[in-house]
Image (tube, rainbow, N blue to C red):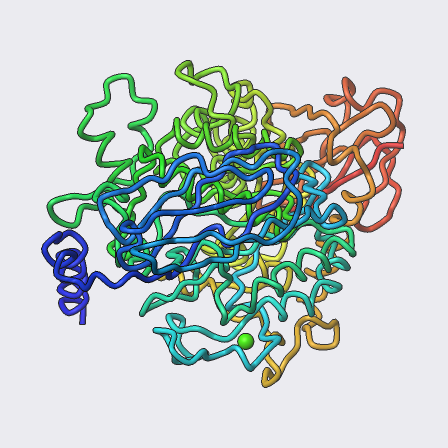
Amino acid sequence: MKIFNFLKHWILWLFILSPIILKAQTNKVQLERIEPMFWFTGMKQPKLQLLVHGANIASTTVLLIYPGVKLVKVNKVDNPNYLFLDVEISSTAKAGKFPIEFNQNGKKLIYTYELKQKDKSLNLHQGVDNSDLIYLIMPDRFSNGDKHNDVIEGMQEMALNRDSMYYRHGGDIQGIINHLDYLKDLGITTLWLNPVLENDQPKTSYHGYANTENYKIDRRFGTNEDYKKLVIESHKRGMKVIKDLVHNHIGTEHFTIKDMPMKDWVNQWPKFTKTTYREQVHMDPYVAKADKELMENGWFDKHMPDMNHHNSYVKNYITQSHIWWVEYAGLDGFRLDTYAYNDQKYMAEWAKEITAEYPKITFFGETWVHGVPNQAYFTTGNKINQGFDTKLQGVTDFQALWGINEALNGKFGWMDGVVKLYNTFANDFLYEDPTRNVVFLDNHDLSRFYSVVGEDFNKYKSGLAWLLTTRGIPQLYYGTEILMKNFASPDGLVRSDFPGGWEEDKKNKFTAQGRTNKENEAFNYLKTIANYRKNNPVLQTGKMMQFIPEDGIYVYFRYNNTKTVMVIMNSNTTEKSISTDRYQERILTAKSGLDIVSNQLLVLKTIIIPAQTTLIFELK
Ligand code: CA
């Protein structure tokens, strides 16, 4: 099977790269598509580049006449099946439809282009900040809200098989919309969906990271309108939506790969060449050029061709599609996949263009890297990267994740156990603003948190208490609130269906009745802290002060002008009693603390902390 795929892949390449085959094709002219398929009036950036695809379209002359819209340049490229039209849209251009004509020897092909009015009610572009709690959903595995889209005739992967982690399970956008109230009740304020663009790949297409369209939602998830509806319904509930963007690669079945506009549309190698997955090439002062090239230009996987970010057509194509989605659906932010694998200057330019159009929108990069310096290197205004400003506001804080895992599972020592967590934050001086980092306990690529702590309920609660009280923007992974478990080997195991998301499910864990007592305890524990956090700016924007851990006890505070919250984490396997004298510097005149979970008032003198427990007190 693997050999077959390998051969298929190379036969495809030969086809793409052979000019002889292209010449042998008929001279008949066709117009397949124009992207973006429509645009908007009132954009700050007047320039637009239209990708036109169709057999021999480059043999036509192009005519575009519409007030306020100017066809500046018609770009021909290697492949005669493409044209790139540079267009300028003035601020006076009115919404409306107009023809773009493609003429060849008196024959005419017409595309009716449209400039749409900006939908101001939809477009809040709020950005995600410290007041938010992000919930990550793998759309195929959350809930099946529409059975009619489970299998779509003509798409490559037709089979639905809920018993296999590699096949599609039928989850969709409607399923998410159906559970927005559940999420709101839990205290969620922001949704992050794994990519939902069309992924018409022959295998394991459910995860969405090898898109085959840039402007179309995968029909098995729903329509573009459904996606827009998800944003509208979320906004109605005071929730935001961020989109998962993959700059680095697309799927082998994407039309620009099956019929490439030009040889350097993607980074090509004499034979399949993988990236090295080594972020160090970006900051290593002794780096070998060959290593850097391999990391950036090697392919993430066989079915994921690596986009050439030095190609201006590629750059325009990708960036415009992102602006289009913000404008079309009213998005609030982005998560940027495989950040370290992209050309870094390209990413900075992308960020500049996005924020020029949408000053409030925010984005964070996936930095699955090693060590705080390497992670901070990718962020805007940091103290280490002297080369250029990345403009990247936040990163997925993998260092904090490894810190909390070691705090909960490791043994206390000079540099070990909970000290690792303390040290991670002591290194925050490397960032311009570490509070924009996204902190998390698990995600779609990682072992589920409940399994990582050995299904120890106290440790699980400790982790959640930390997640919702530390600095940064917390992110949950679907199902963590109901103790879903498994290790990510392979990763399909951590992407199982949310019980109750399918009509035929025996248990519905979206409801208290469907959950076990323990699951309800987990759900309610999380809900209590999440809602406290939502209503108390002190846990959002409050300053942080941490004390060096002693005897396996880690104490930190969040405080502002009106409130102080004290967090005590006991990483020991035994109960401990601590005197609060050492923390006087931040306790100040407070005499007691309200446990925000149990609602009990405690005198601040000697506090007993059960084994492997974290307590959260609002000081009074
Ligand atoms: Ca479905």
